Image 1 (cartoon, rainbow, N blue to C red):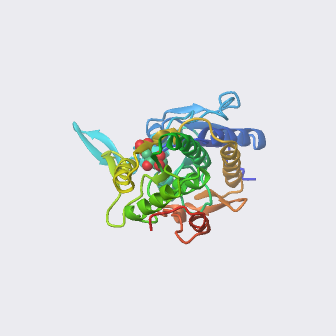
Image 2 (cartoon, rainbow, N blue to C red):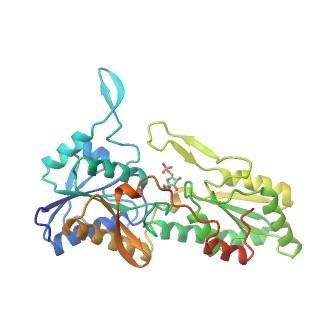
Image 3 (spheres, protein in one colour):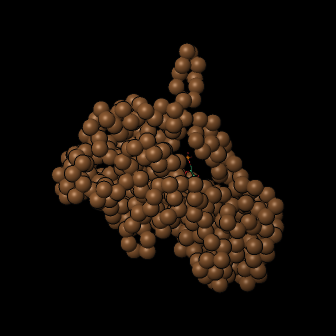
Length: 364
Ligand code: F6P
C-alpha cells in the first residue's frame, strides 16, 4: 500500500453525464472504508481548482447520491487552467494559471487527484501529471469516444434513453404513416446512434463514420413503403455527414476549448426524406435528455468499478493513468496514450455488419 497518499482530491469536469455521482460515491467509500484516507472535492471542475472552491467529502455528504443524475460537485466545460481567461490591466487575456491549481492542491494537503472527465478534461489531467501531480483519470462521456477503454460510463444510459425515444417514435410513425427522424448526440462518433438504432429497431442509421447518400436512404424507405410499411424510423447521429458535405454546426461557443456544437442535421434529413420518399416526415432532436437523469444499473456498476479502481491504482503507486475497461476486466492506460484519440465506430465492424444484415441502411 502506498503510504505517501493520505488525502485525495476529486473533480468532475466537461459535459456532465449519468454516473458521475456513483463514481464520486465509490471513490469516497473506497478511500475511506478500504484505505482510511481523507477525501475532498473541488466544485465546478478546474474553475473550482483555480478558486480553491473545495468541500470535504465524507460518508455522510455522499449518502444518497447513487441514483441521482448530474454531479454533486458541479461541472464546467470551459475552464482550461493551461489557457485560462483572466483580467489583467482591465483587459481579458488568456494565461497559463496551472500553478495556481497546483498551489491549491498543496494548500489543501492533497497528495493525489482523481479527475473524472472526457478528452478535454483529461488533457488537462495529463498536463497536471506532467507537472508532477499524481493524477488518475476516470473516463466519462455519453459519446463512448475515448480511446484505450471499451466503454465509458454514461454511454449505456444515453443509449437506453435514445432507444426508448425510438420505441415511442415507432408507434406514432405507424399511426400517421410518417417518417420519424431521431437525432442523437455523440459528437464525431456514431456509438449512440448505432446502438440506439439497433436496439430501437431503426430502418436507417446515419453515423459520422459512414458518410451517407440521402438518395440511398430514401430508396430503402420507398421499398419499405412498397412492402406495405409506409412508416419508418431513422436514427441520425448529430455528427453524421453526407458524402458530399460536412457536419451540421448548430452554434460555436467562443470561450470553450471545444467551440463547435453540433446539432440540427435531423431537421435537414426529415425535409429531404419527405420530398424524396413522399411520406410526411418529422424530426426529434433528443439533445440533453440523453445526459440528464438517473444512470442505468449498468452505468451504476461500471461507475462504481471505475471509482474503486481509481483509488486502488493510486494506492498501488500508479498515476499518470486512466482507469479502463478491457473486455470485462478493469485495467489502466497512460494518459499520454489516451488523449487525442477519437474512438470511432468501425464501418467494417461486427455491429455495423449485423445491422446491415438485418436490413438497416447506413446510406452507403
Ligand atoms: O460530449 C458530450 C456531449 O453531450 C456531446 O454528445 C454533445 O455534442 C456535446 O456534449 C454537447 O455539449 P453542450 O452540453 O456544451 O451543449
